[in-house]
Length: 258
Image (cartoon, rainbow, N blue to C red; front, side):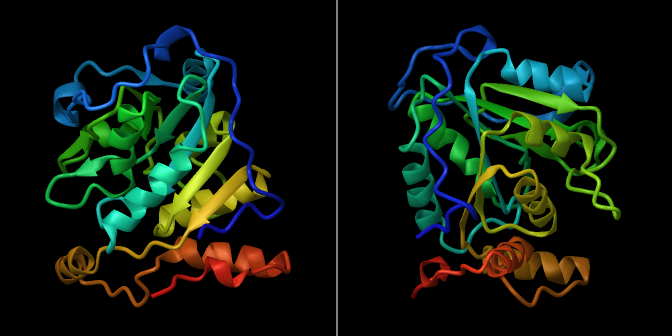
């Protein structure tokens, strides 16, 4: 069971029925979602937006924005469970009035992670958008846009998101904070933990699901990188637990069972 926001369960988003850049029929059922796109093909011509431009582009359609966060390339140990919970989260919202977003790209040779929510959202008729830092366009690692993304926006940002050492949000995180009406988090590492702190500090509606990272992929990455990860639940889990403890409410329902 998900932990709710610190104050109350976030309401189902109820933005006006959308027009503009994200408007299109819903639902699409079993029709094939848009295939992922290699960023190297986009890099020469992809427009890079400032923070204000990106916020305006997302908000232009008038939809409420439901943003998902969590593990990216390290994936999830129980993908079926995460997919079921993503479906349940999506089913709380009206596809005609809601835009689904993440800031997660797909890294070649690794797991899809939380970006797998796009295909679920697309099949249910949600408009979808990827909001990514411009540094990804020129990174030597091969990244792709996840399948199921209708539109991708690159924010002028030399970092990979999150916050700096002083806790200031990156440009990409500034956009996510400005446009998101709710933040749905499935585990997550260092950057997700920073995003979660920022969303909580901003008083945004947040729901958190305990979802450990994919063990075999993580162990392979650790061997190649020479690092050690002691807790497969990830840094975001501990940010959430501390926040709940400070608020005086850490329900047993938030603990992973079995």
